[in-house]
Image (tube, rainbow, N blue to C red; front, side, top):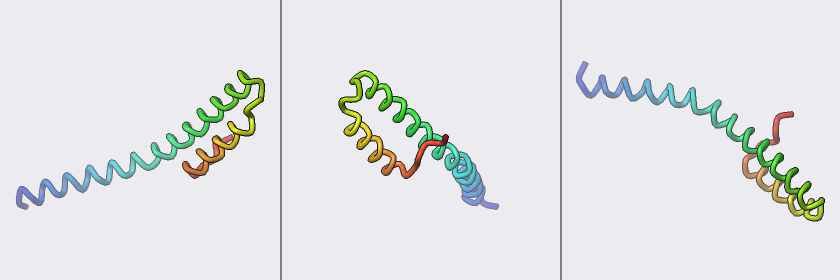
Length: 73
């Protein structure tokens, strides 16, 4: 096997490892982002006494739409 072939095999192995690792981590990151956003919006509602609850809820829904996820219960 040539040097190029060996490098190509190593690169393919690294790519497969990265794909198998990154997928689940990306899903967890989205879930954690949504959960953190819900915590922040709840805190903002508490601090403002609920005066901006509709606006905060609207932003929360838009971010969830961008992420394509709802938080895990």
